[in-house]
Image 1: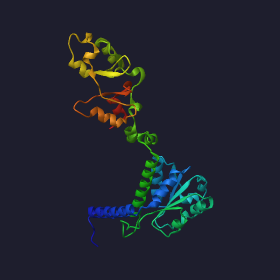
Image 2: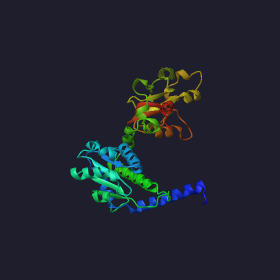
Image 3: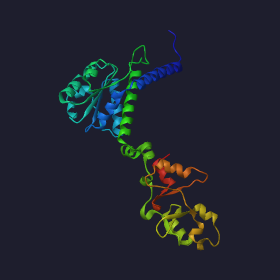
Length: 321
């Protein structure tokens, strides 16, 4: 037997799975819409279940759903038969995954759903299987060739289940109007949490913000810059609106024997770049580093009035990239 080149094997596997995904996409119908609406209206949680490789996929689907606004958890069918059925309430629904639809371990879970009227959603290739016949809604995946043809190990089938689970999660996310701010609530840590942080989460506020009136002179501005230690000062009008900003760069450009006596309005940069407190930190970083002139401080404003100050060091400490 001639052994194939590993790269050729990899490409063959990916091509087979790609073809399976195409079949899946073209085969979706109104049943998918019905499942999404059922889950949007669901009062409880979606219980995901499966055995073997389907079980691993079910765990991932449950985790993705939970992180995108659909309360969900994984229950192993065998453990369900030994007491974990008590985790499933009348307000819940069950998503059961099985390639064949004849997984013996799902039997007790399916019977429980029938007995207590718990909605059952089946994900399977077996359109005439026991799972399909017991399901209130059916998410049918194509019976595409497994990428590992010799052993028929779950490969293409689990890819299709994973993709359909992702499609379900995103459809539910959009149906609920789930936002990046909502997503951040479930992802406070790590790089993802940093990316979803807002200017308001990271900015300096209150007395820590360097501000001075537009009737001040530079000697007063320098005292404020030194006291707050953020390398700048915001210039505000009599109605507390931000009209300008003085940074180290402005000081260098106006350096001279009369600097301390100059009005701040002669030194400040008018109309500085600003953001709102709700701006994503990643967007704020792009705003600070884009364009011909890079800046290291960014005022947050609301109705023209400064509410905080973000320094680029705050973004770096938070891991925003």
